[in-house]
Image (cartoon, rainbow, N blue to C red; front, side, top):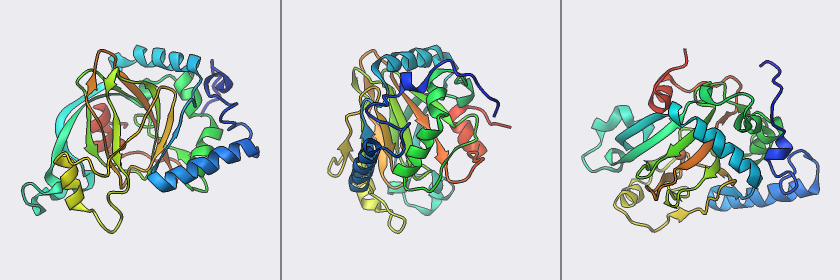
Length: 274
Ligand SMILES: [Fe+2]
């Protein structure tokens, strides 16, 4: 990657007093990490409120607003299991695998996000990648190489919703930029499934509206969210009110050079990176 001269300084964007990622050996950062790991182990999710400084949140919202014309829209009913998509015939009508929910959402493709804007200044800062590796217990992590799906912005307008699903990767990292006036709540069922047990009965109950086991996280603007989404089914409730919900998504992988499959790129951005 060429040497960029970023127009923004990380210290103006991330609250390094509260989260001193620039001082990896400091006891203050060690305390942040210890607390986050404990929460992740307990609940599968860890929120770092105030990760982005208040005035920087405004900058990120402005950047996101300027990109809403570039979004790719999904508006369809979809199953929660990407990995069963080719095997639906093996399951009877009404089975958890065949249950669908509504996906009505817009995504800014990664290549629309400026390399020297505030969002990519945060995403490309190596101490953040190292921090995420520590929180997810990886010796090393790499930002994915996929130009369409490395650093994205999800925009949910009034009435939009992100249906029940699992993530294809083990963990997700998001940054809340702007909350909805109401609705737009991130809800998840921690570890409802495991590598050995899909727990289909419980997933069916979730689709039927049973609330037992579901957690709702108080995501505020400026909060960094690290979340184990591979085995925890999750969704975002419909956005209410006039204000769009805007959230950025950062993607990492254990190996360098990772690209998502072409059909994943197409579903989320309407294009493939060739
Ligand atoms: Fe997800």
